[in-house]
Length: 224
Image (cartoon, rainbow, N blue to C red; front, side, top):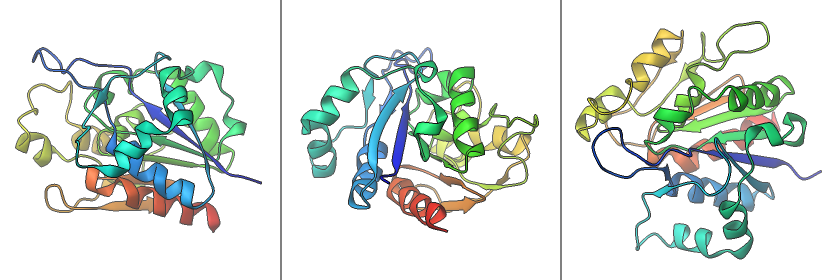
């Protein structure tokens, strides 16, 4: 049976009060999607508000991103994503929370997204997230009331990286610190270096350089 991965995208397009645009970081979807497709996974998408999500991080020299966006089936799906409430956890083996700064605003407060992810996890699936995608984990509780990240090794965009890109005062909270508050054992590499960690079907990565590695670790987790 073909395994299915659901990429969760932010619907938030404004970078706080900075006047700058944001959204989901397209390379953090395109590169892991390539890994999953090579492993014969089916790809699907969901966003907090449904419809088309705002894009960020598209660079003209990234052929993987260019091919991803040019694929007609992918383009059609991205143009009209469902909301979490329209989907059933049993239909997916993985939910992969893509980063991009927009996730910091709408992922944490989406109860429907959290419910969907908890259902996938409690059905034996993997919850994966990269960079700012772990913002979806800060309020994600399992059916016993515990935080999914509590006691687990987790990575994310770090407080140092947020400071380095000049946005520590713009984002609504610092992601690394918030995950630690929720009981996560936060792990990290030097700024912007690849780093990903898997712990009990929770797979997380630090930054855009870690996105493909998160996909690889996710496949390994499901094959165990």
